[in-house]
Image 1 (cartoon, rainbow, N blue to C red):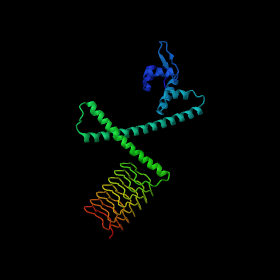
Image 2: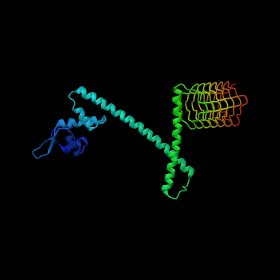
Image 3: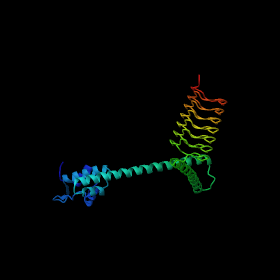
Image 4: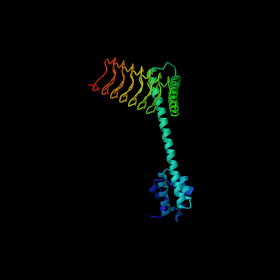
Length: 306
């Protein structure tokens, strides 16, 4: 590579401004150039290599000050150890930023959902000024989010209690709670209020949900083997793909529930109400269905005993 490059030439070569080149000089990242007879700055091949080094280091996320720190080491081993640590710290910082962005995105998404809901429900603003309307709207959004946060805290407290060995959660209130993928086997949720709760892929083997209020809850692909749901209310619940083998659903209200592709083999559905339920592709082999109400239920491709 040719030596004795003018500042404009070297700036163009590296996609930098002449001001940036001078700033690098000021920081001590590159050596001061010699001057031509006419006073022009002339940069050597050493400066070109140093600028290449700086740009490569910047691609690893290093700041100019960090690059300067690296160049001040007396030996290669110390500088490479420091370089590795700098990159590691930068990666950790980026991961923290991503998590914060994810949290911010979720928070903003919740606020937008509440905003759309409030606009749809309230229609024309009853306040005289735009300020008053917007203030009222913002207050309602925050009030709704406050309720959501309380529900999330309750769900987190439940999981923490379960992890310590607690299994008795009778009459707990978790309306609209999100417990997707949670492991809650052998627990007692009798009389619990969990309407509209999200329990997709939850593991609740041998768990008691007797007389629990679970209308509108999601149990998609949930594992409820040998669970007890005696007299539970599951109106409009989504149990598609759920495993309910050997579960006791005596007297359960499953009106309008989605049980498509659910496994109910050997389950006890005595006197259960399944008016308008979707049982398409469900497995009811050896299930006890005495006194069940299947009025208007969908039995397309349902597996029954021959």
